[in-house]
Amino acid sequence: MGRRPGGSTFGNSTGLTVLVENDGNAAAWGEARFGGGEGFRDVVAATIGTGIGGGVVLGGELFRCSHGAAGEVGHMGAVANGRLCICGRKSCWEQYASGNALVRDARAMATERLFDAQILLSLGDGTPEEVLGELVTHAVQSVDRVAIDVLDRLGEWLGRGLASLSAILDPQIFVIGGGASEASEFFLPSARASLADRIIGKQYRPIPEIRVAELGNKAGIVGAADLARVKFFSET
Ligand SMILES: [Zn+2]
Image (tube, rainbow, N blue to C red; front, side):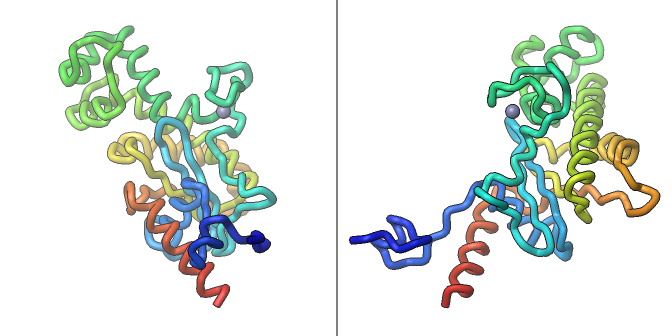
């Protein structure tokens, strides 16, 4: 049995409409339609996980571009000759503004400033080497100095990348998700300041808002379901 153009093996064998989508794109679509970006047409979503996942919605449409690879914002170049990324390069944004970067910075800073990291260290086994991202987001609620400074630094790096994305895409809003967003009140101020500092053309356009994602872990499944729904109704 031949494969129909644009179809899929699963679609052919079941007779169902099948949609295959990148998780970052699906999550971005979910947030843009029903979450933090609801009501906006131009939305860039970034999920701070082990790396930084992303997705772009422009003019109310998911921006896949030529090969479906648009929106890989985590691997945007941000530094020269910096930390080695999983992709093999030493320039990627996600090595500075992701959950992994948060852990790396927290361990280094806690090693240098043991006294300031007492709350953070008390949540784990007491050693900087075993600090985890969720411990940082918990410790910051108890005003741990190292946790505060690490999240402030994360926000500063986040804003740098968002300024670059603004130069290319000019969105109305950024929606930030992922585990670290539980501590957003501690990194959004520096992210907003960093973005405002670096964005080009701010005398001619508003600075994009930075909002926290609202759908949590369900963003991807909500987005995928809605994309499938849109595809189904466009085909029937
Ligand atoms: Zn990379």
